[in-house]
Image (cartoon, rainbow, N blue to C red; front, side, top):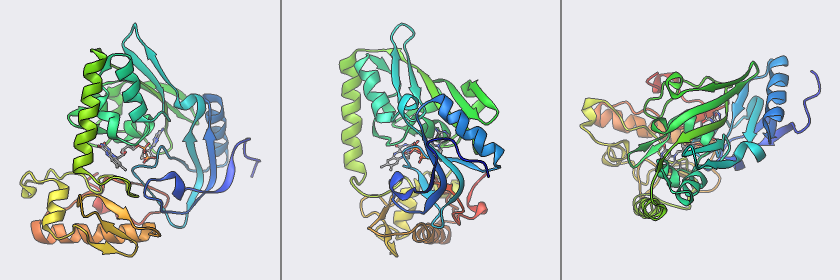
Length: 307
Ligand SMILES: Cc1cc2nc3c(=O)[nH]c(=O)nc-3n(C[C@H](O)[C@H](O)[C@H](O)COP(=O)(O)OP(=O)(O)OC[C@H]3O[C@@H](n4cnc5c(N)ncnc54)[C@H](O)[C@@H]3O)c2cc1C
């Protein structure tokens, strides 16, 4: 094996880079501070036939307990910058920029459209991958383009080519969103800030805070047998609120949130997801699909995904 480029670390612990704090180390890891560093690391990974994974804020991520083979990338420095183009009413962001900071920067600039990001504790890259949404706002509706990098090069993609759907995009494994632009609309700054404050307070009432979690565990089902009920409502009715396995449990405040009580493993989380799915299937006949993404060999069965 050739020497890895400068900045690549070995056996790098990943649990602390996730909000649920579970999982093992990355075989190789780099915090890429600019496009050149990112491209060099991806070219090296390709030359060594290593798989590439990306971690944003790790707010929707389950890392395998035995660790992740290959190279894991996190974006930093220039790749996490936020710049406002006042004339064009556009915000240009690195893929590692945090969504709440993007929402705040837009408010300061008197631009409206990314308010929905104020409570989403993820990065721009993770939000593109997941088509993040909240309170009626959705990433797909404000994205002008995303800059996608892999070993072959850099490509600026329009939203159509990313085929966004509910918490889904057509981004392929190993592709890294290094940057994105959001097309916004001019609005009075005070009005945008009021919307942000309102969204924050609604969130505080509805969801637990200060816990180790990855947000919504399951997607809201489209199955007619759910009868319009959310995943959280189905889990609650199926008796999952507060249910614990190992060091992890469904939250007492919001049944679709799981909480790591301290020393949970990813295996504990998967066992709890399986139990939640089983109870909802038995009670309602509805198959819940996990929203959380896996990094490394996490035993989330393929048939749990709707495809
Ligand atoms: C308390 C809480 C509340 C939440 N509320 C919401 C909500 O209201 N709405 C919502 O949509 N989500 C919500 N989430 C989930 C999560 O914040 C979003 O899915 C977010 O978009 C994930 O971004 P991230 O940077 O943390 O991605 P990660 O969790 O790090 O990764 C998620 C996926 O994106 C990929 N990825 C990350 N960065 C990149 C990149 N630069 N390029 C390519 N792929 C990348 C990862 O490889 C992985 O497949 C919540 C989570 C928590 C913990």
